[in-house]
Length: 311
Ligand SMILES: [Zn+2]
Picture (cartoon, rainbow, N blue to C red):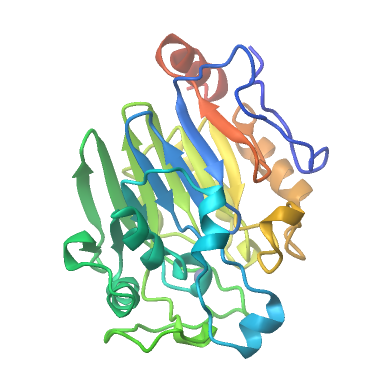
């Protein structure tokens, strides 16, 4: 069986999945990358966003100006309905748009105390806010379940975690990039009736926290991964995914409409080589912003699992 979406960014920048590739299971778990570490997850009955960041001001604007989220830049890329939004940490490239989108969709917003401080500054109603304590959180959302798994942020700035610290009182907004302190970092495990995924939005982890979880799909944050010893191996061995989707590997200071441009130094061929070495039968899909990835369900799902992660 050949997984129809096999591709790497070596032969990449061509669409991998396209929309609804013939012969694949249209009823499966649907994933779409929003650029940066952002993703849409659709189960057919529920829709979730992870770290949605679509306003993407340019590098000079980020450096020099307050950051203003733009609903107009976000909505063309998003579904009509969103049930919940999950934020793994509070840097601007993970949460700038989340409070605005929670308000717009009436969606629950899950995040650390720092994330919620920005949400309160934006006026998100209290009943939508779910605080993730430093020890993490596991919670049912209808027929799905989410876990926030205590993690670490990649040391991507001269061996240091950029902009550490917390934001506990609602800040003045619009804020500058350095006001968006990290506020704790979490992996996000999401189990749905159509399959489970794990979002590692920053390139580090706490092995013992990840170990209890399994996931069909890993959304693997790549930026700054070389500061974390054996990063890819540790994540993949803990979670045993059949499908590995890179994330946080694009240059997120250009408009989405220009297509995927890679972050300097992200080394996609090395990523593909590393995954192939560690998990030779796991599949790698490096999507563009236009691709839907669909994880099959039912019998096709069983075959998919057996094919790609032999025990
Ligand atoms: Zn960050």
